Amino acid sequence: MSVPKEMKRGANVTLTREIPDLRGVVLGVQFDAGLERVLTDNIVVAAILCRGDGEALSDRHFVYFNQLASPDLSVQQLREVVGEDHDQIEVDLSAAPAEVTRIVVVMYVNEGTAVRRTLGRLKTCVIRVLNLDGNAELIRSENLAPALNLETGLALGELYRHSGGWKFKVIGDGYANGVTALAADYGIRL
Image (tube, rainbow, N blue to C red; front, side, top):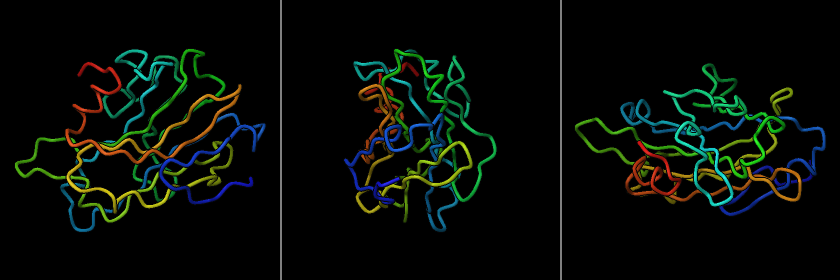
């Protein structure tokens, strides 16, 4: 695959043109909160299956720890991760419904602790794309953590349809109001 291994915010790459037989990917998220154990324990990684207008197909198309798979089973959060990722989301590209134009990977701090934690305390935060067939790393983002400050939510990256195939884009956009802001942006009712 002739793409840069480390991608910057806003960069995108055509996956299925570079790897024509690519049938699925694993989207892995790595982060390091140092000694902030409470922060590590309260970070949630999720995927949102979106239609053309950028909103989720439905609330059931928000895949996270309480809803481990999309209704069509094309996107699933893995219970056991492979390698060094904290969380992994498996995507069967061929099984994604036609109305799904984007699959966005987000993370947020699940509030509930007495002290407000932010993603600005992270030392590292990286999203990776692995080939589902063999788990070879195809792409990794640059470290997204240095740009974070008071954010409690983050859109990490997205798979999206383009010219009959799939591309991947590093997003890296932070949200000050965590899951509430992410839900509002993607049309999800909490």
